[in-house]
Amino acid sequence: MDGEIMTKSARNKTIDFDLDHAPAGVLEQIVTLQPGPVSLTAIRDRSINGDSFQLVRQFPDQFADLALVDPPYNLDKHYDGLNFKHQSTDEYQEYTQRWIDLVKPKLKPYASLYVFADWQTSITLAPVLAANFTVKNRITWQREKGRGAKGNWKNGMEDIWFLTMDDKKYTFNVDQVKQRRQVIAPYRENGQAKDWHESAAGRFRDTMPSNFWDDISIPYWSMAENTGHPTQKPEKLLAKLILASSNPGDTILDPFAGAGSSLVTAKKLGRHFVGVEQSRLYTAWGVYRLQAADRDQSIQGYTDGVFWERNTGALQRRLKKDESRS
Image (tube, rainbow, N blue to C red):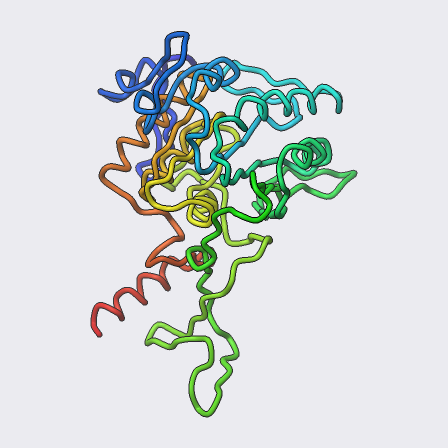
């Protein structure tokens, strides 16, 4: 029921408070804007509550180095009382062009953009993206969760479109997004380890990133980053995008910020951010998480400058302990 505080397990870290029970200092940090142009100083490192289609046009042009865009997929979906209805192909393409017309002028000439979609939405989305940006890649994220279906394959993946403003000049820090994997059958050359290193915790290789990601789980109830948002993206996933396509001190724009995952991850990685979210409740959850990031900059699955395979937490701790002894 509305306003009722549900009893949760001590291990359940899900952020799902209602506005009547928001922690002290959260609601006061939610930013709203008056009509008219605003300076970058007024919006940088802020989570702004309101309609992106009204607010983003107020922002200064060419301020963002990277945009992370997770628009409503072309599905019937409910977001804190805000409903999105499935549209025809023409209608959804028109909707996509509307937010592109808002976001694109805010990007620097050599900025990058990542756009999220499910497989059905991608079919509709792709031609519009290609008409406005250079399409560099399509990342497939195997997210595991998905509803089963008797008459079709269960959908367990999502697309992430990698786009750039300029075909040749853009940021891509490949060494920042390597994945550390265990070496099962180590190869040696002249008796020496080849492209892998050994420790008491095991043998490891830092591998080049591909466009198929199977190492990232959907946030779940025992994770500190988990919220009640129905389409939340993991911080680990967003960290890959941010590290690859921006540098410390850069500014990231998210016009559909949800519960603030991209903003929190940007803050943890030393980037500035500007986020807009229509739901006041989701904005409050994001502000709460931003405040928590002042105390804890950790990102699950990302330590020591590398990304780890899923379910390797115990191994990471063992390796850390081994390194502290040496």
